Length: 217
Image (cartoon, rainbow, N blue to C red):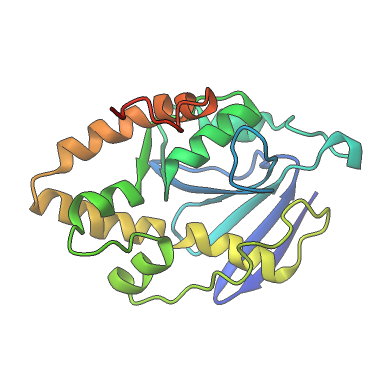
């Protein structure tokens, strides 16, 4: 079951339980998640957002079986997440990759993270949030008003859908800017090494090696 909404010039398709077979992506897809909280070992995955960077976003709502849904039975989405020919573009991929691994049982790869890229090249600032990047690099203001809303609700509001879509609609443009900076500063190879490590970093977090960090003294 799907429905279509329009917000801020974007087209938003909201799907229940899985991505439809008609939704296809090539090359690179921007992905984000919405969860009940920020503890990957505890909190439930509620929504997965995807965009090809073309002004259209697909939102996949995962509804638990206790509410009449099919839980994590989403073969089309899982197939996309593990497709080696499709690069998955995230902002703060460490959390999303860990959450998708725990909730859907998939190892998401290959991965790019705009937050890591920003920290590698924008060393003149400590502001690496998505809102900051969109404003500083693209001149786009995005709202974070719905960030702490109830993503586990069975029926998401239009405001929630618009917010969720905004988290993926600009990632392709951001990556183009950051990739150019990585090349300019000679840190592209280092970024790629960090990106390759992200699935392992997420697995370590799920095992509890985030606090204390495995790499700390």
